[in-house]
Image (tube, rainbow, N blue to C red; front, side, top):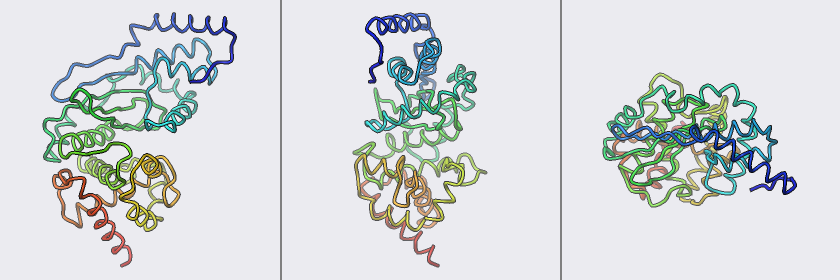
Length: 322
């Protein structure tokens, strides 16, 4: 936590201001929980974000103080649970701050503004995968940094936890993608690891989620399903041979450094998110060339991922040579 460069008396005055502001917003800052219907419970964190946002604006906070207020009053971001994640959260906040006013009306609507039924999505995903009917989901609606990054963060109290940003992104695509992770990981097979597991697990799970979105929301191009920035998919495709070979050779690597490199960092071809390119291609090959169904992919034991990833990449590279 950063320490403000203020005198003791000024710091004490600041604390009282924050406490008074937070007290005045207490009715808004308590997360709203929507009672469960079917398998989904919705927890809305937008009131906590608004308590932070309104406090920072009222205090005319500089970037350092704004970061401290964010940590005290909100402290939720789509970043890895690592020191690098905290650095990334700070950068996201600094980069997004000037953009929040344009999105504040959407943010103030919170979870009530979602244009998709989470319960309907959960039923559609479990029907397609043919497993996970018992899965229950806690959907946490939050405010991110306009990166549109929904994510899953494990199981608590018997419920899979999914986080969805409201300020940016495509809610339908994001909910389908993340609910696929929840059903797959918590209802179809048993995974021994989470973030930082083998690269082969990352490739299969992300690839499956993107292909489920493609099946349930047809009619878009591949950039939509891979949630790619403009030009990213074209750049990845141009370096596809290098990326596929690099992932094949590292498919059994594990650890946070590997996960970070193939998601947020620069991968073997120097691009971010190379795991998503490989996952998209690999699971596409499983469905069309290896003739696997969504159910068979979803119920394949993770111990077999290394072999089927190698088989799929071999097929893709052989096809490229023809």
